[in-house]
Image 1 (tube, rainbow, N blue to C red):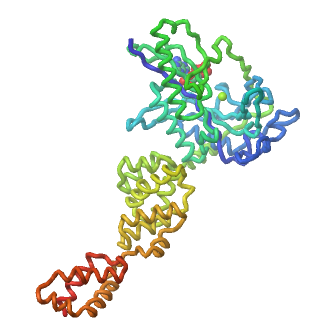
Image 2 (cartoon, rainbow, N blue to C red):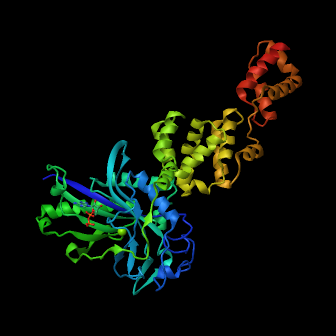
Image 3 (cartoon, rainbow, N blue to C red):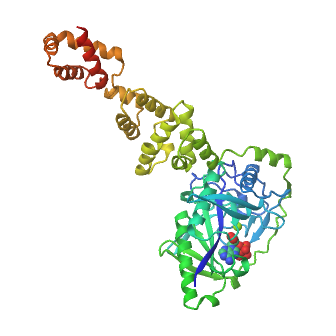
Length: 484
Ligand code: ADP
Ligand code: MG
């Protein structure tokens, strides 16, 4: 039998750059020492009351709008009740689908290997993150700094069919988070975490929920690479169960992704499902989301990656390939745009960034924010190549030297004496000098030994330490001899 996989994603992403956590006055930052950024509310102490952070709500509404979701008229929060050490209050403040999360029923077009596909969003909701724990042999440590950090959970419909689609979707969403400055969306900082739901079905049947197989939810998939591995592994595992006849007795279950063994490991079955006893948090009044505020947020949505890409192709004449490379990371695209703002030619700027700078960053595992060479320095370099001050081969050497040694291109060119002498006036001065000193060679030339030109050009090169433009020098030399 042929099988088809059905995949739904739950993507958690922490909101960055709000002045405080979502319900407490502790700061929303990463650099503090463990447990150095905790207020009584984050610990669930009696008598504390949550205060909703407006910036977190604003960013959530913006994300909801960018995903084409419907924003509710009123903002509600609910309590999801369970106990675990990372949740000192004994409940998480979140938004269930009743009465209404910050976004419901949207869709998003995403580029999957050059083909546009559409993903369907069930909902996106705002909640608080839990504390983070580290498990050692025999004991665990806990850091409450993360407790209460604003977290958006995006739940898709089961609309993906393989890991390629799922990855392309996640990358698109991450890019939106970054371009709109909602989140740094950095999985290395633990800001993005995914749960992946996978089932398989008979490929010949119509793709409707009645024909879907039993879904398995995989928790703890904390990098995009792991999402790909976990999906591929789980599809294989389920197909094997199907082929060996064990699939039908499989209950709906929760598994977790294990990085060490690169397998999914059984955690619990649906029959042990926890009843979270959701109810509206009585400590947070419902908040009216005025339509004028929502309109204001809508109007402030910035230009996103796909729009920048279209501009690079239409206005700057870049190829699809080059434009795609430049918009992949927002900071690279910002750098590119700043270089153009400084006055650089868009096509040259694209070439220098893609061929030299990005290669260098890749090799050195650096980000474009880390380099000393600013957009305006890159513009200077491009100008020096374009006006013939240095050759493009020299330009590459200069740029690498600047990147390696934290220098600016203009001074590297000055110091190394690389500067090609291209101006006719300067070259004429030296040609005249050489001819004045070589009267005998002029006579030889006039007597038919035209190859003395090579010697005379060589003399100019010697005087300029190889910096005179050889083509111009040669022509000028012949012209000047003929005049004498
Ligand atoms: P639950 O009731 O277990 O929370 P939901 O229907 O709310 O399940 O869906 C949770 C996630 O599981 C969503 O991302 C959804 O797309 C996905 N999902 C639902 N059914 C399937 C299925 N048959 N196969 C794969 N994913 C599924
Ligand atoms: Mg949740």
